Length: 367
Ligand code: UD1
Image (cartoon, rainbow, N blue to C red; front, side, top):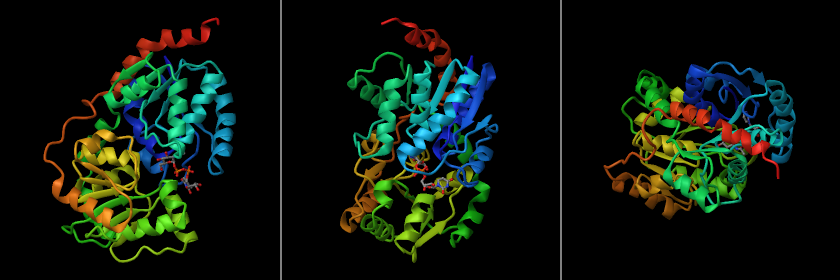
């Protein structure tokens, strides 16, 4: 089989690493980078950290409003897909890159497989929710990480081509955390921390938290209430808004440039608590046993909340303080296996092989 994988934003580089490796053991892969994330510290460092081969096609599309960005990606993807004529187009998660590739593949009649299918925040104000819903409804193979994701698809009437394969991050998170310890002291030094000092790790980048001055001010004020120094790698969207609103990160907040994956896993493994609005980090924190407060009112990773390891909170001071206290004192010892055993990459390749005929038949069927 020839699989054309489309990636473009930071989480997709991490997600594709174990799958690309598994594909290349038995088949051929064409790796396409849309360019959505392009800075070295948002892209190149992830290719190096996750040991990814260089992309076969670099489309250099980034910035702009959503329709503009997605449209330009589709225009750039179409000739590549036509020329490569793959058996499968493989996409990940919920970014504009994901939906652009899903729409382009579908219009060309190319079988589409979606890794991390079935996640829902049930919040249509999030661009990611629109991207996921669209991509799932266009996919012939829906690779779901959890039983909850399978149930979400069923509720939307999607039953064909759904496979519960576990989560692609299990392998890469555990492997990376295991071999990344030596960097810790240096990283803490960069954040002005001593080796044994307790700290929190925070990331903020959702438009709902960053794009309005009042909300971002509340988020920054809340981070100052965590009670230990907060290491905050600053995503470009957050950096841009902080400058625009002239907000300063002082006191216990320790901003850093965006970190690579190895550095992030190093800090995550040893932090006391995580505060985030990222999807991926909530799950990575669970896998490494770090209690989490999520600064949103919904999450796609509901099982981390049900297991008692993740708490949703608003940045309002009382609520936030209570969530931090609960995360510190009431996170249970038990951490059930929610995301399946290692080996998701191989399970995905098995399903791509098994579903190819059925997926191609969808586009051959006469009405
Ligand atoms: C995107 C995804 C989100 C994912 C996140 C991870 C969508 C709709 N959202 O959000 O699901 O969780 O990536 O980070 O696809 N920028 C740079 N340098 C870069 C990359 C971006 O300066 O290397 C700037 C962009 O020009 C833009 C801002 O950062 O102004 C945000 O980038 P954008 O691609 O719009 O989406 P993210 O917020 O990163």
